[in-house]
Image (cartoon, rainbow, N blue to C red; front, side):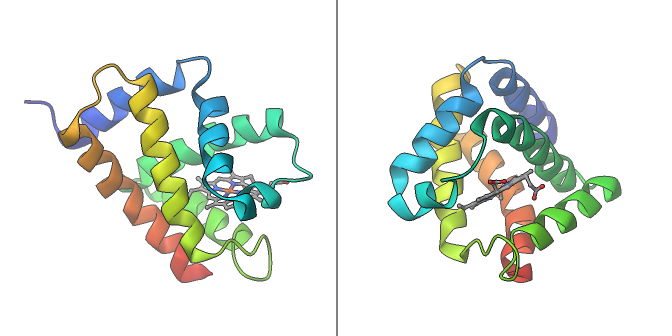
Length: 133
Ligand code: HEM
């Protein structure tokens, strides 16, 4: 049987190579709350989709134990903290929900066990980000 980490990487690969994955993620994320949409009012969304592609891969590598990725997640935690972007802790719940909805749309192999692996892995980095707020 594949390890959880391997399954996650393969699932992420299927999503990241699906052309509309990052666009659909932001559509789902913005539709989940007007306060979240408001945060991106001045954002160049073409650039943002590329930044998220990297950020998400760092969260996944951090869950896999990468020290280099941990430093990237620390940097993200800082940029999203109170004195910077001021991303409220509740917004991360919406972020995960929108992400899981989007993974389900783009990964034909998505199922309950894969969903649990994704959520477990992302939680590590997200808890770090929320603590730094
Ligand atoms: C910017 C990733 C969660 C709102 C960024 C950037 C990345 C990123 C890579 C580019 C700038 C930087 O490196 O700091 C992530 C990841 C998240 C996450 C991986 C998962 C935990 C959130 C949440 C919100 C949010 C929950 C809530 C609204 C923003 C905003 C920007 C930003 C407003 C700045 C956009 C701009 O430059 O106009 N994010 N983010 N992020 N993020 Fe996040």
